[in-house]
Length: 471
Image (cartoon, rainbow, N blue to C red; front, side, top):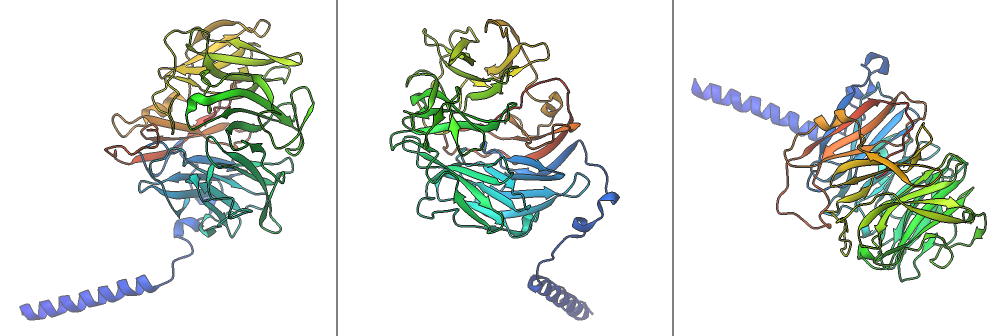
């Protein structure tokens, strides 16, 4: 009797095993049932959605964009693998795809995504002076057709890539930019995609920023201003030490091809230190940091720039540069003591107590507002536009307070990033939140915390005028 039971068990196990083998040999399904449900049968998207488990060992920023009704998120999952999530509308389910690229310990190695005018999806990331990592979809709006493309224009040149970014030109064509080289010898190249030929070409025929083998530019923009022009600001940096940032500079353009200074005088490309317009000639060692410059616009549409540098006593202060006649006037916004930042370091810096949080903007009452933080506390300065003097300061809500309640890991900082591309007339903004340790100068830590939940928050938009937060 026992033998019969044993034999029956063996026969059942063999049948089960055969089924497993057949399943393993079958081609992958083109879609899961949930992928093809009619969107009108689904519920409206929740105000908070868990997207995936994500890496929490250090900060490597994800990104969300909205293009029309489509929403796309790129991130690193709990296994450090580059991942993409997409849905065509908020009523549709998310679809996921994993890409063959894995994160190390470098906080420079964020991932970025955009879509060209034909709907093809483009992804770049996981690079810090590394060979280009770039994926493009074979089919419009289909993340599962993403495949790796080895280079954009020149495989020999694209071997030390950092800071990838996508933009669009005035005609809506996709632009890709990145640096070739390093902090002390880098050049930025801009490329434009042709959807008909599915090829990239250099936008300017040469580097846009040329460090001449001696320095590199760190820029913000090009951002389209209320005047219809594209505006760009940058600093130069001489070596991998962040203390060598210098010379806050400015440029503008109508078409991203021809460029001029703030007075309308044409500027020849490539941009080198000798031919860019200098807003504030901050010297090497002057306390200015790349990544801490923000571009905004006054009521007159004139550009203004918030940033920090050291004052005459060596304390780090928040500054505001405003266009004045043919030049610029620099106003000291804060009046702090014991705030000097340690910038003589390389890698992704951590431990700085001062940050410039967002673009300066004009409030509904006509005052200029400058947002910063000190020791983790958000501070908004109120500036009299007539005199440029600070009239008051106080706390502000850096991100919607409801997000702060979503934490899973004790002792690990909450990171928040706003989605881009949400229409100006939308009733909602979208934010990603996750927990991850801050940057550690791109070095490994001794411990890895548990994975974090990457969440998407749908927040009712306030109609009060306030700036776009910038990472």
